Image (cartoon, rainbow, N blue to C red):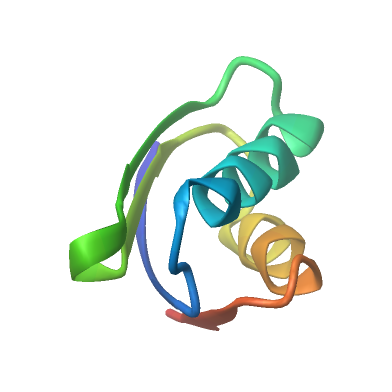
Length: 65
């Protein structure tokens, strides 16, 4: 299932990597596309939306549903 999140606070490649690793810790098979300039994270995963958003938020980023 594709899910799209608005994630603010990503300012560099390290931020993108942190978000990617947080998602892949939940679902190693997840397909992730990050567009930092648009504050957009697209995730193709079977994990529940709340879990994915929580993992991103735990890295210190603001997640809007």
